[in-house]
Image (cartoon, rainbow, N blue to C red; front, side, top):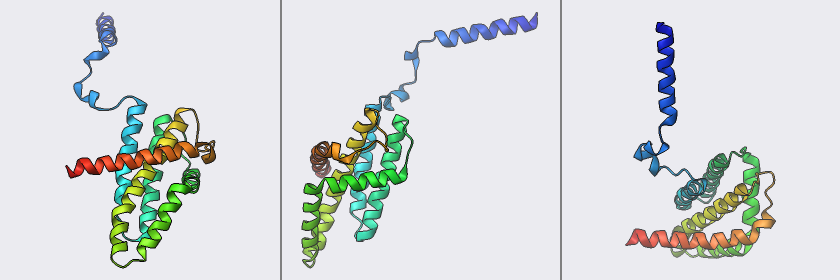
Length: 188
């Protein structure tokens, strides 16, 4: 008989657990974004700031390597939100293609930076002030482009940078505004 009463007690406990309303979840869970849109926006914003930090590295090759590492990590986590297999080589290729496709913003910036770099002292200061903004805006745009691509069912292997060129440029400008707004808030 004891076995039956234990089984009955277990059944009652299970029934009570399943009948408990979900609204009784601890309040700490409310702070964690549950929606993929919210989680991806927070992820992109966080890596945008990391990219700005990478842009502060004064050594040209090291800053580029750090920026690539930040973007690869962001896309790895972003693809994880959508359950998409991560392909590092495809990511590097895609980001490089986006850089080439966004030629109006990136090439203009690159030429300006090369010219500024030639001016003693002023060039170094100008680079230190502008490179982080570009890195952050570029990372923001990359994140937004891939977020949209993943949300529509795309993968790294189906990504076509030519199809997202206009969207990338739009998000790059949006990213510049985000960075400008963040620095204005930080200065206040």
